[in-house]
Length: 330
Ligand SMILES: [Zn+2]
Image (cartoon, rainbow, N blue to C red; front, side):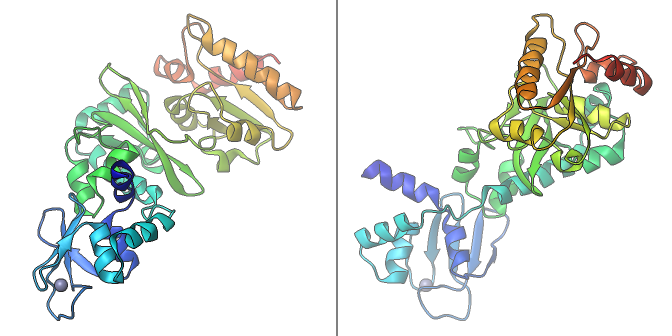
């Protein structure tokens, strides 16, 4: 019971709960505190404080304080057990992760211009079109400031850790990474981070990678280029190939595979040509599965050791890439 109780409390942010009950609050100073009128006693001057980091409240007027469960007991005049049952029925978590990810993406995007190393890295990866960088909402996680930013907006540390934005020590999980938001239906559903240093290059949040990246824009196209990485996607788009989508890895999830099959089209499979042959193997397997569904496929053969990104970074141009598409075999 003890452990379940902790889990239950962690599922809800006290601030979100209060807001859902129409509690109006404003930040109290710069810390993780919010203040508003006390919902537990009549008052005209705000004396009810919520600490979002600790997920606790305290009212200086009536002297009541505690956690969410305590608040439910007091405000609904329920026993401890009844409050517990009440909260358990609220099966939908009150905070929508997409809102938090949206805030995170916006914050990282603001940081990008402030850190020359991040822009330098993008340039190194062949990405120089500032309008495109803005359009893709590429950002940078300098590390150390996300937690302050989000807790000041009322999100608990605990929630941020559960989403994988902070590690168990409370540090920024995307530390020193260039970050791409992955969107679906206009909502951010995951983040991809690419380290600008060598170690632990790739990172996603521990949740679904969602649909094919940028799918809405290519869904109607009779020919679609499929790449495995977001830097491949970005340089191809920059070079004028706008009928491109990205599977975020060579393994497609069920949704992504269904998307490719939703109408007759030709898919140009443009995975990395790595030394161990894993990219080519993945291409062949996927081509086979697509053909079985009546989808026409071409496997694009990049020069040895290349992916579309490195192809352009090392001087390849749009005309040469176009020739590779034309030379691609079924
Ligand atoms: Zn009070």
